[in-house]
Length: 268
Image 1 (cartoon, rainbow, N blue to C red):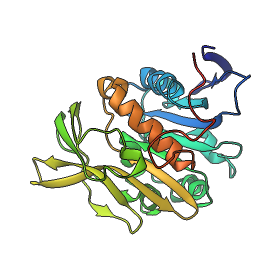
Image 2: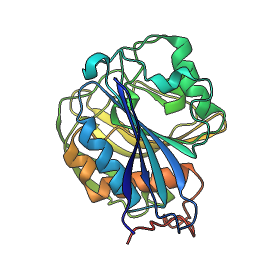
Image 3: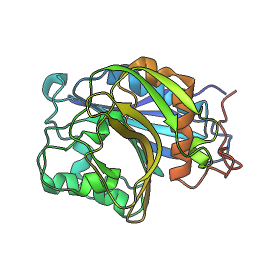
């Protein structure tokens, strides 16, 4: 049965949708996708991700997409759901694909991170790593597993798989050309950061890790700084990777890199 898109709520600065799985299937993982902000085509990326991941795993998406006042992209905007203390309640995993690097409210940012510290799995894509970097708190950086404050120019990246035996990297090529993307610089790696792939930095003349997993408190986190453009987001290699990372963060990926029974895609 084909996935369907059901509008739940429309606000001046937010749009919330559920991409629902076949109701006759095993209960899907409930994924909250947070998206919006500066510098990226989030309008299309949210559907690329929701549709692509639904074709690879048994998931159901709730999507919250906010940009800023009057729908204009604003890196200082604070996503409204994060104002709630229990903002992640009811979800099995949160997928972050957001770009709000100008937010400086430490209490607000710590509240985002606390949901993951308390055990909600997280998937961190691209500019989520640069979100909240203007703030003084380190909790979001600890949640990510790394601190990054800048990236190199948009160019082709040769991605090297350095952990081929890790379930998340099973099926990922030994080397993969990520076309027209941005290499985020690793300024600091926190203690539970586990690197899975790297690419060479032309500016810094050293490698930077761009796929990883992390443990933050009780929460498992998968991250990649790839995904600036829709070409990368749409690539089957990228979508396969993110699907494995999402399932891994929820404990639903087996040692061979396949979904455990019941968490394969139910789409026909």
